[in-house]
Length: 193
Image 1 (cartoon, one colour):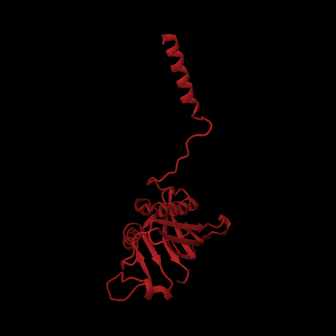
Image 2: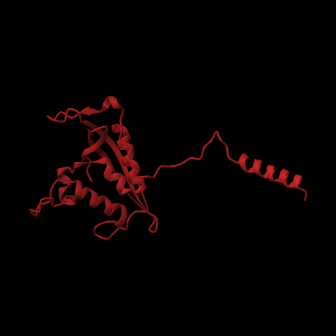
Image 3: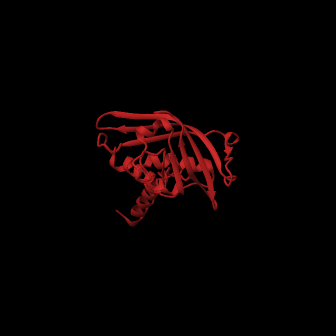
């Protein structure tokens, strides 16, 4: 084969490889990184959904305020409340450290009673209402906080047993700004088990 034919073949092969890449349709990528997108309350709640979907504990922790509280309805305390202060009585709330531990168990280890392994898939869907339906927290000192009530659907899928566990209801998020970012200060579960 002559040098001219080799160059032509090389040029043709190069054009063929380049033509497979469409510059007007870049590769689609899904960001599964640990970077929290919480520049506004809506982005914060969308990042919460992503943290659950990706089972990403590092991302989840970046969405919570250091003084975070998870609050239960009083009717749920005997079922899922934990003794936060060590007085032998189940409390209707828990703080940041307990929340991180419980979420890590959900993402990595399964149920604390050993009945369920960690789910293969987790889906948290929040119906985030339009901004005109958000509230300002009326508590003194919380004038810059936003309160957003969301209908939620949570599903845990276990492929080995072909089982899906679900929960749905209403979650009330008390969201506060710290610097240029927003964080979940209180997550109040307002749904009955």
